[in-house]
Length: 600
Image (cartoon, rainbow, N blue to C red; front, side):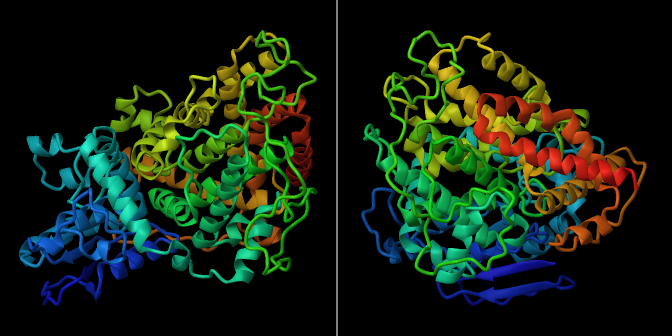
């Protein structure tokens, strides 16, 4: 099975291969179609082949210094630049390009080679991680030297491995980066990203504003398109807050609305949307938790759609079509960008780096934006496995990162080098304060690395030491520690959500763990599955009773996780930041419910 998309009329004859064929009149229409595909929340499980016209006429080439900004600039790109857009921005679609002179026998061979590797999700995960090698084993040739050294190439020409993604973006030349920035700019000047959303009516956009305002954020009742707009709302709110600050870095370019949406689309498409848990929905949920933390801590102003009571459930009946953005309340004074400000996160008036328990640590506007951006990208490219799995089965990325924070190092590298370096390079070089040497790039990386659960106890111990004034930190390190603690809390905040929402997250996490166990058994040769059949799931139920009927033992994992990880972290963070006490209260309520189920 394959999908063939073409900008030219061409007769495709592939015996014994099922294909779908679509002809597009413009490259813009083709790109729009590809962007909209990812609103469907599953992995691409077939190869896609795009046929582009290839000619060398002057109108078909575009210099990176071109000043053309009309929509026609996208159409006038050369074959190579169009191919680069497709390969770079749509890697997740298992895509390859050909020109009108394609050899159909090669196309048929490529489809045959890739299709059986893509059909089944467990196969895809194994190939992404480099822990299953069906493409090598099928040759039955122990001396297939070229295959052994092909781990940095796409499998079967279309399947991008984790090491392929790392290699392409970490070793990219300056000229290539410049070209990609130009192509990203061309896309944003040619496409209205708001129009790509399936439902962008004022009613729906207003509903999403109110959804963002609730701690009971209904992530599983939102489509990927809905989630994109939720991200836009929160990041745009933080950007507008930064604009109003007194010491905005003039070298920082702040994305406009369409550029911000384009950035969010790119982030979404870098996540594996077929992952039951570690997908774009989880990223947005973590971002929304950080957003609420920052509001409660006073780093961001409250807004009209914000609901103070964390237990209120949002049912989509509340909306105001005149409000499709988050509307700040009253006058608000942002924490200063100066490290000497009394409202700075580490300031205590004595200048010695000690934390004063009477202070309210607040991130300033650029630090708050950096934390939110880190939350959005903290799991990009997650393969749906665990660090323990990657290390045990000697995944190539585990070897590259020396078995230390393997997935977190991967996420940070891909997010910074593939996404931010192209979509928002000035953000990376911006200092977190005028007198600081710490850049937003460093803050984002350290925050993402902090989400490694293998380092959980280390961060809890640092929190305890900082809380009791036993750990002396300079200002930059205090900002990094507070940011790390907040993103860690947000990353496991599903256990602090009201019970119905919390149970939805528990359900999908159990699905992902089951997939990892299945992949382990296949590698260990203790189980076989039919790789010609896809793994599918029913939509996550909205009702708590339905969730518990499907998962009658859900309480076991929840009690274990709360006892081992969540309670200690949130109890200690609430002592440092009492505005977050509500998370502890909900954990206690949820835990009591789960314990009661064990006694039935």
